[in-house]
Image (cartoon, rainbow over all chains, first blue to last red):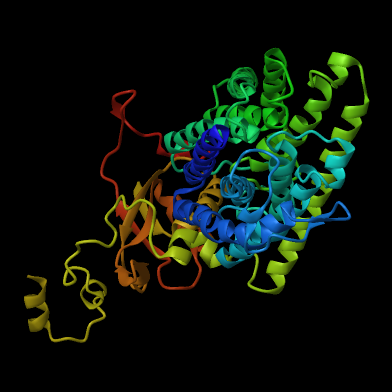
Length: 435
Length: 116
């Protein structure tokens, strides 16, 4: 019974830390988009945490962890997920809260890739579909002990495949279907740089994500008495640090400058890639995985640009490509079954199949969501809304009010008639009003 | 020598710069400004209360040119910055009395060099 108490505290705290990662996503994205869309990306994270969290609680959790049919989906626990019977000493409610953080993280990955040009209502539709059906279905395959990939023996400890690769490739399909932001690509195919609104803000977001990631990975033990969680946390740290190191050096060599956005994404890439293997690999393997992911993220970003898919924050390169790499890396570096440690192919084949299944599922679902939105609420914003910025067109308020555009201005001073001279009011009365 | 001061929509800036470049004009000064003319106040909402955005964000371009360039430059700005709706902006032309180059410390007679 003591373990029940200890596990409850650990998992509830870990869940709160994972949910705090949403703050990281919010700052990261609002720092990397243009000033005129900074409020909009933040509001989208609120949609994830509100509508997404409720949708997962009511329907999603049941599909993911409910009674299995055919290894494909769960069919029970709808509306009462905390009634789940766990084989470990942990209250169902703690487990549900922890899983909720994962579902919300999955959908937040997508919000970055579709930033600055997506209809806000379409985003609400997207969040609902991802949290209620799409993420729980592939999550069921991998994490429900009766899921078809789990039965094959696929290993994905905290979700490189189940969360990051899925989110990344749904994001890829949606960003492709959505088209680029106006003016992003030139007719010769080269990409233009759009000024990010605030790099220190984006960096703060990355630090928060990094902090939350310790709970994301170590919390997935679901067991506070498992001392492996220390080595899991250490692997997480090492992979994030080595991903950032690799990206930092490569940008200095390749671009001549230490690129802040690429370094941030290198750190996140390392964290994404170690997520699947953090409990299964050695510390040195974690560093190798981290370094590789830091290199992958830079070439993947350039590759996505070459495909003329516009991804404002690099979510596809960070989460999509490195989610897949992290899943495959378990097959290479796993201490007991990895190809490079035991010369056994069998786990690697399963990991490749699992990663492939998630990518295909992600692309199909991304395209499906896009079509649903096009048919219902509209997928892309109008040209006018995009030019004005989504902050004003959807939320009525700009992120930063540098020039005091509308506050505290005496109405007489900026009266339409006064300033335009179109007034037909008598000259005498006009003079008085100016004072 | 003349100075052209053009106040345009921010979203038309890239197109306008491209247009100027086609004329060979590569030197100019740009500032972010707010202001208003005939463009209607736009409506914002904050905590359920409507407010009016009385001053619209615009971009101001300042270009100093030889007299013979002025007409075609103005026409180019019309072509690239016009939408046909209120709020497209204004162009003002000023005479320039003297111009100096700070690097050389001498009177600037190289304005035409901006036009390659």
